Image (cartoon, rainbow, N blue to C red):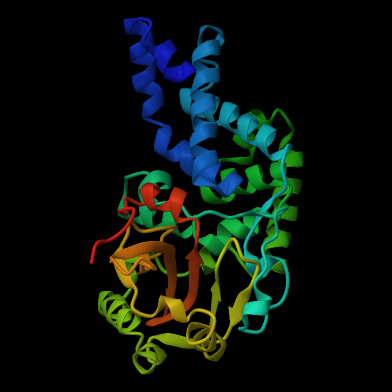
Length: 333
């Protein structure tokens, strides 16, 4: 039992406070995920936020709303975490695409990778338009772009652009001036524009993804039918496979990889998973080397644009990600 659970079990008043705090868990987790790039770190950050809130609640005098007070605590927790580690990244953040050969495979132990998050963990329920916007601002490309910003700029941009806080509210939260907030926001916007990315430019949310396209993708991938896949994957699509820093640029290179070093994926089974970062996600299971059943291989996250797959990310850390996305540890024959 963690310290927060111990604390809130102490009295009815504590239980009432716990109920109040829990109402903000989902939106705070989404905020922390955008700040940190990891669903696991985001959950830890929110738990630490609640511990700090419970311990200092007797000093909370209601000068601000409970929500803004919790965001202040969560921001400080995230800034503390970011001060002690390197920024998270995607393979395409680190260098150019490489040849689709096994010699291009490389892991960088000093790099901490962006991790996918289930929509249900980081997107609060609410008005459908707000839910759609929230999903667009947890897209992998957008979260990765945020990691390039200095931590305080990152917080300002998320609070102002994503959560629609007023500059005066953000200034109070960060204990700074409105002029300082506006300056940080301007620099953050310029950085994103330099990378040709903003929240509004991300792909449509998962509800708009073509269900028939996804069904045809699953069937074609399981059949390893490159002709069928050619009609589904855009010519300039990209693929990456964290924790390897290799990424592939173009459908031809992707297929060269799939029929070369990645040929062990032939015969895989693919299961739908919870939506990840506003995009369709699938659990991929390769034929087991034991000769029986299928072993977990990757969480596939697909970006779709104008009826075609434009990006495939194969997250290989199945030991931690499959439980998070509700996927079974293996499939029987």
